[in-house]
Length: 241
Ligand code: URA
Image 1 (cartoon, rainbow, N blue to C red):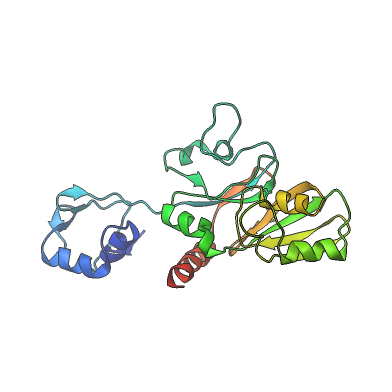
Image 2 (cartoon, rainbow, N blue to C red; image 1 turned 60 degrees about the vertical axis):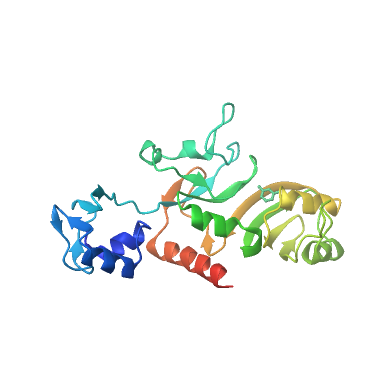
């Protein structure tokens, strides 16, 4: 694997491109024991030994995993009583400091993002970023036009403000609802607010990510390059707004 020295420093989050140039000029950066001559020199971050001010800098890209959460698992990194979503991953991921980006209830299934990218998680979860999340739902009673309209317009779930407008498609006792907030037990409480009850809930999208239909419950895969670009773009968009 080859990459430019300045890209290496930006991707590990230590120096910007211009800071790398300055550090190279100041002979603060060494590659395999020799002072780096240029910031755009090609290095292999997995094999070459890179030091900054005499300290080795280890290459560590962030890891992003899409998981199809089954029922019965809690969205936490550890728990003394109940199985956590982390237990569905192979051991090799154990040391990376991954955590679930957001929560799904124990009985909710579907799309979860697990990552060690704290900044991205912070932006995806921040209430001001309004990341859309779509859930497939089944409910106890058939939805009628009036209750569906209420859900879409915003309902009182016992908090200071009504829920924000939601997009809703439904037929009888099932459908898809898209919300741009992440209030505690939000979907279940929205249905309670209209005198109904959620009987099944599955998250199918999270921001730009869509649950991969090839993943069975409990299965996972790393995000593709394109998916990573998409969520990072999302993060940038949020920062700029
Ligand atoms: N809303 C809920 O009520 N539960 C979830 O798990 C996610 C959203």
